[in-house]
Amino acid sequence: MEAHLGQKNKQEEFRVSISKLSASSPDGPCLPALARFSIEPQGAQLRFHQESESGDDILIDLGTAQLFKLSPVESVCIEENCSSSKDEKSYSRGITIRFKVEDESRAFHRAFEHWNTEAVQVSSGGRLENGKLLACKSKFDDKIEASSAKMYFHYYGQLLHQQNMLQDYVRTGTYYAAVVENRADFIGRVVVDVGAGSGILSLFAAQVGAKHVYAVEASEMAEYARRLIAGNPSLAQRITVIKGKVEEVELPEKADILISEPMGTLLVNERMLESYVIARDRFLHPSGKMFPTIGRIHMAPFSDEYLYVEVANKALFWQQQNYYGVDLTPLYGSAFQGYFSQPVVDAFDPRLLVAPPIFHTIDFTSVKEEELYEIEIPLSFIASVGTRVHGLACWFDVLFNGSSVQRWLTTAPGAPTTHWYQLRCVLSQPIYVMAGQEITGRLRMVAHNAQSYTMHLTMSAKMWGAGAEQGGILQTSSCKLDLKEPYYRMSQPQTYAWTQDQQPQQLIQSQDAVGSGLVQQLSQNSGASLPR
Image 1 (cartoon, rainbow, N blue to C red):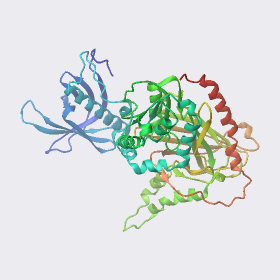
Image 2 (image 1 turned 180 degrees about the horizontal axis):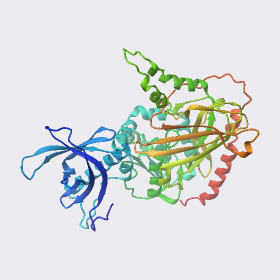
Image 3 (image 1 turned 90 degrees about the vertical axis):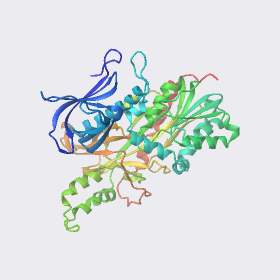
Image 4 (image 1 turned 135 degrees about the vertical axis):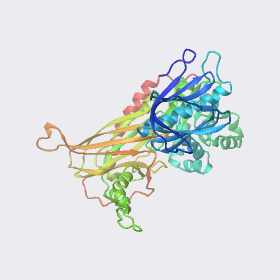
């Protein structure tokens, strides 16, 4: 339904039901209509075409309109200072809009925000002579909800949160070591620091001899970075702080190296990996390097009766039948599932793992941005012990594939704890396994516009013992979680009595050989070193 501008009006349509708001009849009849956003000669408009024969079109000027959400499937559009053909006085009017499902409501609100900005462009003379519109939003703005972006940049614009990351000495020390140990990659090179924050990585790059560093930071932290860099005058002359998003800013030259800390919880939370990839495509020489180079998401089934009982007990509040005379039990089921929809972020004892972990690799040097919108990982494990499996444990690591030294930054259980901790997806219905039994499933992560992912996890225990060769699923359990809303269980790993015949440290360390092979493969693919 979208036509090329200059040949035909650009349009976007939605099927809705509408009713007019009025003082005499606040709840008028709700009639089906086609809502169409378009750019007309007089500006951006929203037209409601009523599908009944007697219905007249309702025209809304987006330059003077506002949209408010009343419920997940109902909104109201208010137009201010519009004129009537019968009366030239200014007044406001409202249209109640109803949608079939919540997803349609979200899509309509995103479209309204986009077209409302288009209206501002048109009214300010933003239309080009050939009929095309000036770009009014970056790719980041099109993907991310404005309120989420505002909170995100506000959070990272505060020094206390930067301090929290700087005081993660595993994180900061590993970055420093990766840069210093590979100074040959930086000497005389142009570096872009993507999401520079306080500017610490830019300063590291300058310390080892970078020719020039462009520190790109979209939050108000950019001003603090300028002050910190200016306070180190021996390095400041080779660092330029640029306030803006990597999707929008322009740089005077291409980069030899990108350096960034784009990792969130479970590697992908906050969706900054996409900005890292966009920066690669926009700024990096084809033969350039990326620090970090790859990321791996590690997964293994776990058994933790204490955690399961803790999560389940949170919903017991809703089993009260006389809470100030009110029976709360009708909401118990929803509350129970709600608590199990929260991934648990904490540091756990690696002895809780019941099978050797697997991992999913994301190569930052080659992955396409669109491939990060939906990540699907097949699961297959062999249980080391007979136990009750309560869910899937996850962590990540990243590789700095330097010319001199390949260094890993890991968040694995049993390793020194980082501010990322580890993450566990807890099943509301655990599954039972025997030693040697196969556990299969799938982890599917779908990006959403609140800068995170919806996680869909399914785990199954396959038939075991006599008759197993015929295959089949013995038990299965699924859950849906929001990576944006975790349960931060910030406690140190508990001491668990250990009587089962399992050595989890060996399970985790068994991946080292695979990691070494991966480094060798990346080294072969990296080609010759960059010319100075």
